[in-house]
Amino acid sequence: MQVVSISSLKGGVGKTSVTLGLASAALAAGIRTLVIDLDPHADATTGLGVRADGQLDIGRMLKHARKARLAANVLPSGWVENARADGGTAVLDVAIGSAFAGIYDRPDLGRRDLRRLVTLLNNSANSAGSSAGNYQLVLIDCPPSLNGLTRIAWTASNRVLLVAEPALFSVAGTQRTLRALELFRAEFAPALTAAGIVANRVRSGSNEHTYRLAEMKTMFGPLLLSPTIPEQANWQQIQGAAHPIHQWPGESAKNASGLFDQLLSGLLAQGSVRNRVRR
Image 1 (spheres, rainbow, N blue to C red):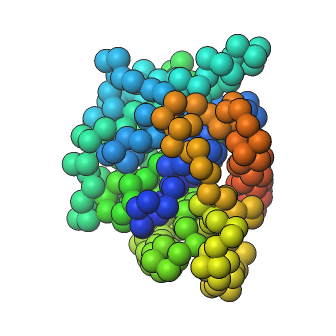
Image 2 (cartoon, rainbow, N blue to C red):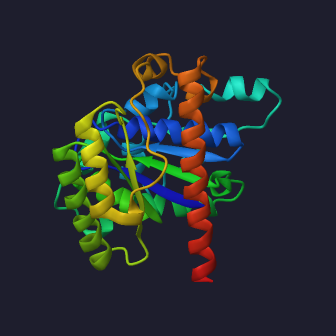
């Protein structure tokens, strides 16, 4: 199971959009996937077409990490019904986000609190008859900060995927996030690595974006992933409809779907290489 945190120090760069794009690609590829919505705004939960019906949200599961049963509280994405109608056995589950998780979004969490998600995932995977250990991929949508929730996510992750817009403040924020990741790895998670940086909302006709992309290539080298994701005019409409981009009509959505397929393929291949090296 690969656990990937999707992170950004700066809000508004499309971090949740990238999470949803990768989830859509995973669903289309038949990869058993869990999305954990750690952002208290719970936008990923909304975009995945999920509404709680008595289940514990991720904040309450973290509070009772030793006793909470992940498998009993995740919900299938609203996207899955259409995917299964095509004859597949798609799995895309969601650990529901909520404002309650904000109780852990503090800068002063100790090691025990930082391991709450690790405990939840391990206990659920080891439970008799649990399906939680069968996920091939876990995507964690983090808040746009380096406070407690992001650190909880990083502690439970194999890799961190950073999202940046090719703009001055976003590039500077990405530099700071990489430095913070190195410090966090040294103190808390020696096996944690950066999966790379996704340049998102790229406008091909913008001189500023062209300049910043060149700057990012110089600054980050191979960490800057290919392909980049262009600005998608109808993202708000797609997410508002709680629809996977792979099932949205139109050439623009089709092209974006192909880009997310490539990003996901690279992520999974990267994880497989790291696993072989560790063995």
